Structure formats: structure tokens, C-alpha cells
Length: 452
Image (cartoon, rainbow, N blue to C red; front, side):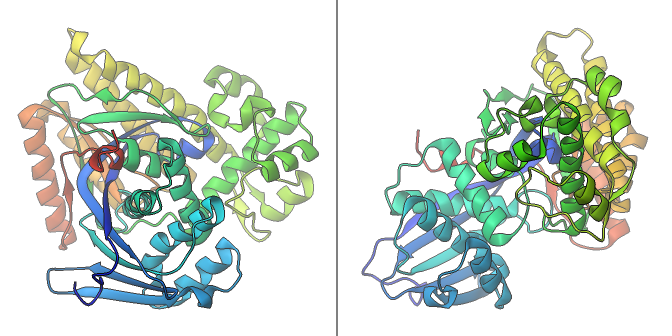
């Protein structure tokens, strides 16, 4: 890499893992409890300052193959984060570099760092588009490197929030915060409980001995910037608006919450997951239409408090199923967490495993109901269901944003591990392509980069 890095400036490197979404997923932006596990695959970023305004990016694709991208900061002009992101992505190779350069731009805006240029080397074995947060791993590794390079002393949650800003505002992907928090603060062989209201991180839960959480790649690329994810998120916030107005909030209050980012005075503090299931069923589900056009919603209800999705006049949204999902998902995740924490004490461990598996299956079915299902992830889930507890596998659900990606699987013991491997081999024969089997865990970036 002598042609990338000079000998005149120091090089700072940092590493971050991808993550497996065990439970919670797309309910993150609605304030649900989430359970996340860092995977063993990681991304590393090495950064060296320049003084000529040039940003050189090199991605190590294989031992001998690289992909380069170069841009001068002057090409971005005096544009917003969104505007800069569009320029970067319009250039060949910019769709990957935007996540790293987005971190620079966010820190310029929020922490006043000087953008004088940089040389950046990216190495990653977190597969892209598989629903295991490859983009978050890249952002979190970049933010950790920049935190050291510019001596920023960012707080733990603050770093994750800034990384999310790079994805939301510069890369233009409307993801919630769980990916960045999980990549940064996760712990090896533990599940990280998160509540994104906005970023509550609870004590990590050790995965009991014998329980295995693995993932089978469906072979269908997952992208959180896809239209379906955005539509589901927009419809979810539409349902919140309807409920909030019914609870006495005004359009003006909702609009103020949107622009200020302060949701604390809104009904349920702005989060659907704060509504108990019985209350939702008694008072609110009947308020939510099965379908509504963007035009009719804006005409009747005026505003959504979400700042990272836009409501399209021409599209049809489904507030009832999308608004229901986080309410029920939050209940499912809390029950899953309780079962996991009490697992060692249980005499009938099989019953606990069966119930945890049932909760995962229900979560998967809910993804399909809101429109984020896929026939290939469904096929993997059905293969797990067919094998069942008799062969050591208990449940499965699509990980992350849905629409393909990876299926997270709950198995138990050696027999369960072997069954997962067998299903992986059978599915790979069906798809006839290279697929990933995710197994194992690592520490998050906060620990990997020795900040503790």
C-alpha cells in the first residue's frame, strides 16, 4: 500500500463487526426492545490525513484486487449532507465510499473537524447486502478511527449516533440506530439489549451454553435504502400520527417534534412500542386504515414526525399492519429476553426453546405481513420448521430490514448445529451460488479498539 499511504503522516486504524438481528429488527425506529449479536466477520478502516483536499479510498477486494475511488472536497462545494451524498454516489465507486466520507462530513458539521483530505484503506469480510450491517460496520470502524485521529473523545452512544447520521443523511438510507449501536457496543457471545428511545443500552445477556444463534444467507441482496423498507417505515409513522392526534396532540405539536427532534411531550413519547398490546387492541387498531394513499394522508393528517422518510403522494401505504408490528414485536422481544435470562434455571428447557422459537417465527410472519417478506427467506424458515425441535432447531426469522438478506436461526446442542449445517448445504444446492453461513461472535468496536 505504499502508493496509497505516505511516510509523512501517521495512520490510524479501527475495526468493527457486523451484527445479527436476533429479535427486534425494523421495530427499532418505533422504540422496541431489540436483541442484537455481533458476528465474527469484521471491517477495518485505516485513515491517514492529507493536506491537499483529496480523499483517496482503496477497498481491498481480494489479496490482489482492489477498488479505488478519489474525490476532491472542492467537488462537494457548500452543500448539505444530503446534497454531498448525492454527488458522491453519482460517481463510480462512490456508493461504498459514501459511508466513510459521510463520517468525515458529519464530524465536520457536528464537531468542526477540518476536511483537508485523507487516504483511506478499507478491508472487510462482512458480506455486503446480506442483512448483517455491512454498512454500519464500515461507518463504526470509520468513526472509531476518526475519533482517535482527531482526538474527539466521543461518548459511546454518541459515536453510534454520529455513524447513523452518516448513513441516514449522507448515504440516504433510512435505517434505525440498532445497527450502529450493535456494531459499536456489542459483546462476544452475548446479546445486546437496546431500546432506541433514542439510545438506551442495557447490560448484555450471556447466551446460555448449548444455545446457538446462527444465520443462513438467502442469496437475495438486502438493502435498507430499498423502497419497500422506506414505505413500511413511513406507514408506521403514519399510524403513530393517527394515534397521537386521537390522544389530543395537535398537528402543530407533531410538526414541532419533527423539526426539534424532541418527542418527549408527545403521546407515548413518540414511540408505538410504548403502547401495551391490550391498550392497542382496545383503543387504536380500529383507528388505523388498512390502506391509505400518501395524498390522502397528507390532506387529512398533515405530518409525520419521521425525518428520514418522505411520504409519496402517489403511493399506497398500509398503516394498520405496519403500526401493529412494533407493538406486538416489542411484546415478543421482551418475552424472548425473559425466557433467555431464565433459561439456566428452567427444568423444562425444551419448553423454553420451543416458545423462543415460536416468537421468532411470529416475528418472521409479521415481516411478511408488512411487506418485507421474501420467498427465499421463507423457504429457509420452512426448512427449519420442518426439521423442528426433534432435530435441535426451534425457530428462525429474517434478520434486519427484510426483503431478503440473512435468516437468524435458534438451535440447541451439537445436533442443532449439525441440522443447521445440513439445511445450509441443502439450500445452497437449491440456489446454486456461493452463500454464507454465519456462526460465531466477536466483540463490538468499543472493545475491539481498546477504549475500555
